[in-house]
Length: 203
Image 1: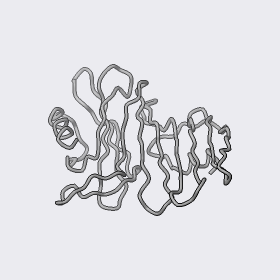
Image 2: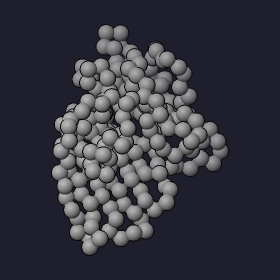
Image 3: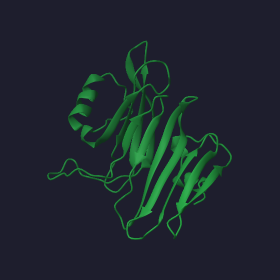
């Protein structure tokens, strides 16, 4: 993955960067058509410093000049495990964020739970480009406790419409289903807080 990302950077030498990016700190990158103009765009997740949340860089291709131009940097919205890639003995982490391009041009951002304690919550954001900004169109989570029986819940919530569904396991092992119905919102990714999604899901 690292070699592929470095090659990707070599393919876009004319990219106008607001600041240099150290290639060894690029956690993952993804291409797709975020703004629906038929050109290939780019997004990258970049580590900052140990213990701090990561940044996300967005680029849109200028079709006339045929280069990737910066479309925004969202600071410190992504949590993951710092691995120190520039140090010997690096081992692969199971808590790195993952990016997936969706058929409609949106970006799926999966954030696995940090390995702390027995309670784990994985979250997923769906990011979409609307009116010259990247917004959070969807939120989902799944929670479970490794050390407790029948302690689990999950939710899928469409931020734009306010609709969704949630479920929670009961002490007897059955599952209670609920409908999410709140006011729809347009929230920029830079202004997103996980509490917004959990609150809508009734947590």
